[in-house]
Image (tube, rainbow over all chains, first blue to last red; front, side, top):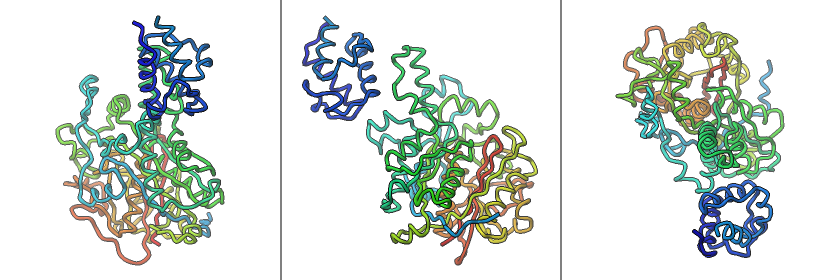
Length: 82
Length: 416
């Protein structure tokens, strides 16, 4: 069951908030996980695993380094769901 | 043996989160009121695992009430408790201005992150390796609490963890004294923490018959020195103090609670869990502490005893006190605050050091509760009923802590 990009963004923002305490509103499409949101690699792995569970997709470890922005993650998840 | 008290170490801040209160002051007030922190454990795992002990001295103020959601998520409960107590102690000390490279942290723990270790083991078995939390290792490591405190306060002189079972918290304070005396730091945040109210340690302690099974009367279960004592009551929490060189504290006009004058340490090398029956190892620790504090045994007027409420341990400690103090034993005002707090394992020595410091500062010794019928083998003047006043003038006290493995630690506290 594919979700809209907006739904994925909202779900991802909740995961980021839970792990880092960042306000969900700050998780915007063009934000970089490392540079704008200050998310370290350990937190990123947690976010990835929680996203896999929440969205019912598999995000290979080799793919994680390509997920530089929130949009990269949303696009990958949307693609994996379809 | 030289005392090296030319660089005196003083206490300027106190912090604690315990079964009796969310702060050191709340805990102290509950002790003076004679309250017990033991209560039934309301966790589904108590019935699930058919634990033979159904109560514990659980934390009074849940860390989630104090810390942020992210802090509780990313720190094991043992680190959470330590952080809460350290922040309180730091604020109580007036947040001293100190060069970060002259500020240290020493936080002991008996067991470390047992909740994280076993939760993540469950995750691995039930969901696979990808579901193991990436912070699992830093959360479960026993130096996690010291690291969390060091990170939070920016302490760069060193972050240390002493591990000596139920003497860990006291040993960390001894380590901190040495850091200041040897010139490695001017200020050290020191204490102990434990978060082991978990089915595995409970089952383990119960299997060795160490825990009281007075399930119908939790608040009466911890009864040091009483003929009806049948084991200790597991507790949890943390206690932390701010130690400074006297010079540093005076220069900034800090309030000084007391001098943490010395630590005496020894090992029994007798048995992995049983104390040496004649108390020679523990008495050596007490006498080392007295000597290094530039005191004579007769200068000690009060002992906050280790006294866990086990049939064997309480007698062994009495024998050690008698061996160290001889006839002066009759003049000692003794209390066993585990009767109220339960046994906080790696935090116990730190908590009892805080209580001893409060006793010297306020010149009041909290009474031991549940002592209805004193063991005829134990000839100590134990405070019961009402708390007892200590005299004016220069006074000194000891705090004893002993741990599985034969670790003996005595801290000497002198009035300022």
